[in-house]
Length: 390
Image 1: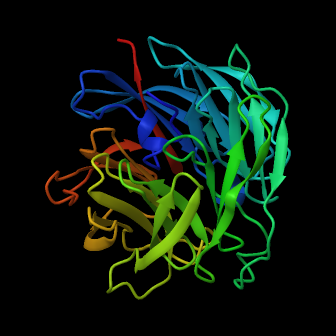
Image 2 (image 1 turned 180 degrees about the vertical axis):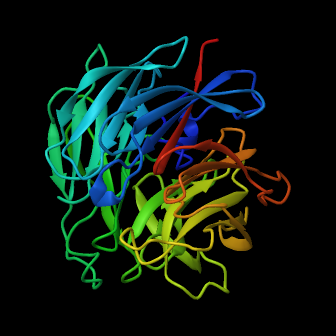
């Protein structure tokens, strides 16, 4: 199993999520939350759950800390890392192989502000972090005992901010997943309406730009997260500011993205404000899922109606998407969702209504069946599923 960053993309998230609730492996769920008053957070930190074979979630542990907004494991699944939104550091934890409980190993500064996403490189030597508010991507070395060393390299993304004056004030990288072959880090930049392709030297930790450094997105789209198709040369971004999904052709040799299609991530009957949240490709590559958060950004309350996840069918011929349906997440502000590795369950984290809701996925149509609440926890914004020894 590879690194997981909360199972948000096929390349990174799904790769480290467990094999689904129907697997015989025992699962532990790690839920990151918003905790600070500035974010109207009601969470306490990382809540750890035992996930039963019937998809029942039992609280095992609460690790109290500020705004652990995204999580990832290393390639051995022995260590877990958390970025702390609105702060300046990332923290490290040892994962107990039997219970899944966490033991703190310390923290390290990221060289910037508001780290929002992280991923471990294929060699298991470096952690890559996106500093959203200060516009940089950095690497930190993974030490043998799971701790993190000081920043090895810092790369600022060049360019001009987009036209959305309040949201696009400068470079704002939001996601740092690796491409399927591990050769590139692909970085959606919400502030500049671009997606960058970055290289990482696994020996030195140095960052650079690929042969095609970036691709422009539609003006004022604010690309947020990107997910790769597991077999075909395509990738899909969820665009926060316009609530759209963009289809790209992926040239793995050059690390180049070519835009092919843009669709609304919301239903045609959606007339209010909405922001795109998360995106994922099903493990079989037949469907794309994208979450929609009602309201005009994090500062708005959202609701009162539940938000949705859009389901899109993927053409095996050209990678294009066709809308299938929009399903309620049975909650407000699904900043995050993830799929199990078998693609049979989708877990939506409803930040403002404080629930994790599980939806069964119909394998033939991709549609989501009526959800069931599996956990009630303050301001959940990330879920990482991990198999542990029984």
